[in-house]
Image 1: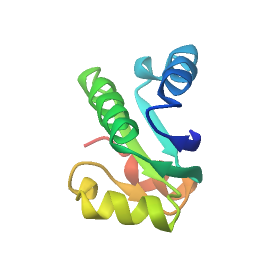
Image 2: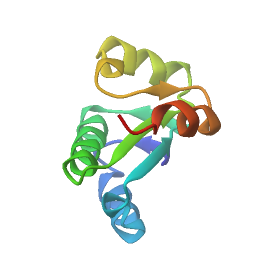
Image 3: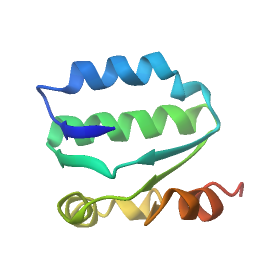
Image 4: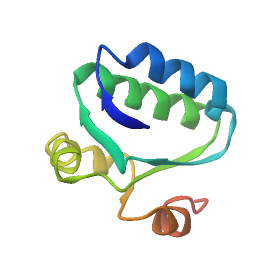
Length: 99
């Protein structure tokens, strides 16, 4: 994901995700390094995507949020539901371990 994930970019974001077919994978790291902003629509889509992956018995982790995105995720207590890591390597090592 990259740029602003908001109501204006959501169609493009969904299309990109659908082309990747990530809902069908079982271990996904979503790198937020290049995401500069989420609005409620973008955050809602991220949550729906995470739920879809989990419904397919997948594991998912987030990593590399900038300060603004990190504060938003923290305010919403997203870390209670999904691991948020500082790097892709850390997310792969710690966040995608099967329970």
